Image 1 (spheres, rainbow, N blue to C red):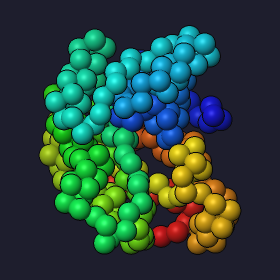
Image 2 (image 1 turned 180 degrees about the vertical axis):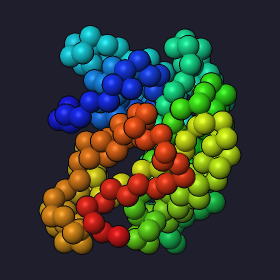
Image 3 (image 1 turned 60 degrees about the vertical axis):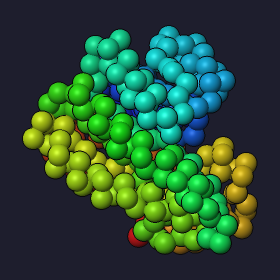
Image 4 (image 1 turned 90 degrees about the vertical axis):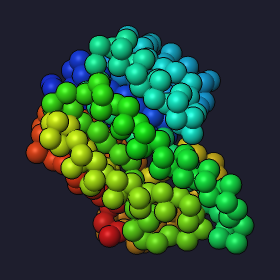
Length: 254
């Protein structure tokens, strides 16, 4: 990690709140915003992984992010964490709705409870996170929603997840209109097939890895850094004219 080289002076001292920051793409987001000099606050359901991350960042950068253990399905806890972080840090400049869970499931096995759980993890926190964060944001602030290329591809075996991510596309467009008059820009990042430790542990095989490469225009595996590079730009003042857009980073599938 920590391979990106571009620096954004406007990110220095910005207050950045990230959901699902303890591992995967979220961990990479936390580290790179810390490296930019931002004041980072994040939540995650996995306290042990998050505490280990904080210790590593403290040792490496002499900066310890604000952290609270939160399950994003608990909207009260999510909104309280956002309010507390904004209060303790003085304001909120960037919100990244990153938390998600891309479990695989067969259509025949989906129950109403399972369906609701998919949306409660992957879609509902995005809206209620924005609702809470906007109260503490001023002109020039940025909200970044994490989408997925899976719904655009109509990928099977994960209909709850793809439905949630498709909704984030339209939610981003609408919220850009809602918050634009306040000077708050709202965009989404739409990753392709990203290699994370969770993917490696649960689903990634050499055969599946090759399938992804074959359908991409660029023949390499997308890494978390590739996604974070766009997040840094969207969080910085350099993206001042970007709103309501869905930035696809898929190595050329769509």
